[in-house]
Length: 117
Image 1 (cartoon, one colour):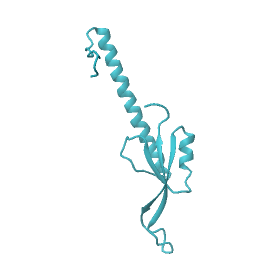
Image 2 (image 1 turned 90 degrees about the vertical axis):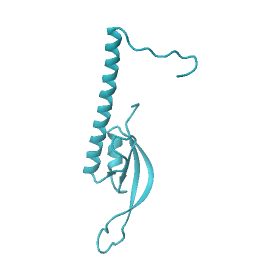
Image 3 (image 1 turned 45 degrees about the horizontal axis):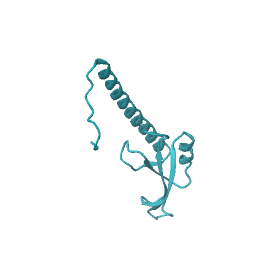
């Protein structure tokens, strides 16, 4: 508590209690909506050969895709905030026996929800 600030008192009337419960429900509904948006983003990214490397339900989400992927543009058109974070190198299985290099160059992006959360 800050100096000069009065302590917040608990709701005492039925009207105050109902208003407090409504605010709590709205906050919980918003959190569920954000979790649902993250799940949908994850499904779209997986279907289009991308990877989200952040922990579940963390915003902004870190997206990694191959340079030729159109996924960042598509997500931007859908209303997500897409910020490029440059290229990164990952190790994976060789593409073919003629291209035996295990290194992959990927583009990294931060994906966030528009507006305030």
